[in-house]
Length: 315
Ligand SMILES: [Zn+2]
Image 1 (cartoon, rainbow, N blue to C red):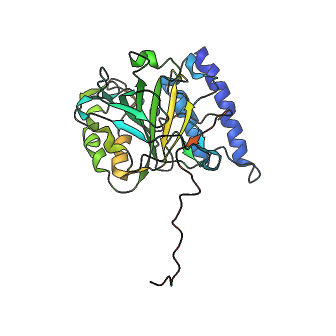
Image 2: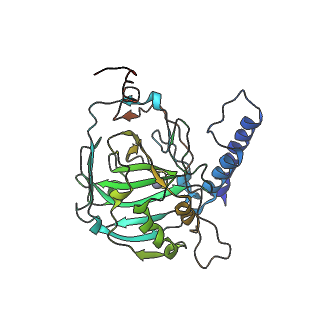
Image 3: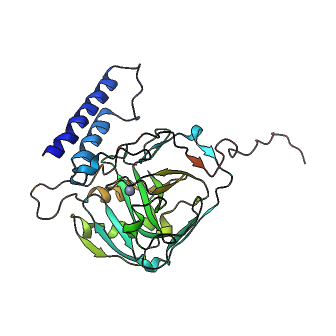
């Protein structure tokens, strides 16, 4: 109880400050562009979830995640190479509802599914992917772009298999992890995702696991993976270690409202619990940049529309 109170008191203060910011009118800019219910429920839900009740809830590091990506402040780095994921769908093994999200897990005992290139010097093995999402389509992503919120965000988690021998070791170390982030937007049905959506009812409750094989994680990447932002950050769930090279895709993927509705039908709670809680708003609040640089693999202002052709160019 003491630990919980020590978390909730500053939390309540924060929410209070946030409420004041919102009600004082136009002079102050809200922390994030969202309505009051969204922001306050977000703080309460992420803090009250059992995953966040413990000493790790106060990280206090200098490179925490997620962050808001300010497009104009990101720095184009011409040395950033193209990203080269090389995934073997045969390494896909199971889906697990861990009580906070659902994890699609991959066999990471060999280098069969790896990520390299981009900002990475080493080979990083895929171990799992998962999503974060909101209770409505107005919010849900962990990262934002110029404060723009997306309904959901995919995280593909890899660990450095050149330097470490397993995930549990890499997670505690500098340069241990590489996570690809992809924003989800509501639009047309995503055919690649549907195979996954179809099996979700089988892992509705916390701690349920089902076999899930031959799923190609590359099917969830956007068509353009050459354009991305990268920065040094942390895990967004406990243990919050600052081991992550984040690679956030500029291009989003589209999923249908109905597909995301199936995500929201999952539960934070196990079958035995009396009060069942919908799995929604499973994201961490944003963290300060603290002087970090976000690099981009693309030039945001030079690769716009091709020069307009005059109406009478002649032949
Ligand atoms: Zn995540």
